[in-house]
Image (cartoon, rainbow, N blue to C red):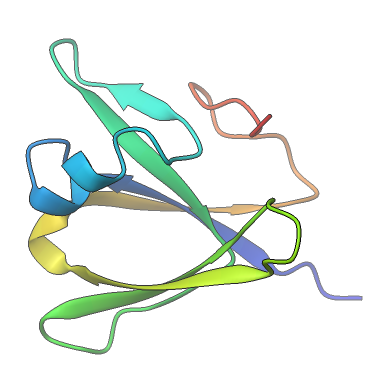
Length: 95
């Protein structure tokens, strides 16, 4: 069985999308001054010149996932990880 990658998408808190996800996110990472929201995604596509397509699983009853088109300027960094390996240093699993 192949382990599917997951992605921690760190949004720029100063962007419009970052402000939208300031409360509805999967965690934060700080640059020392600002807390940037993190979205834990199961799939991303970066082949569009303007947007990053991301799929985020939802934990709400009756909802399976959320499809997002994130402008490149709203994304600070994307970190790929494996579900079977420990989370990267500085990140904790979603609650």
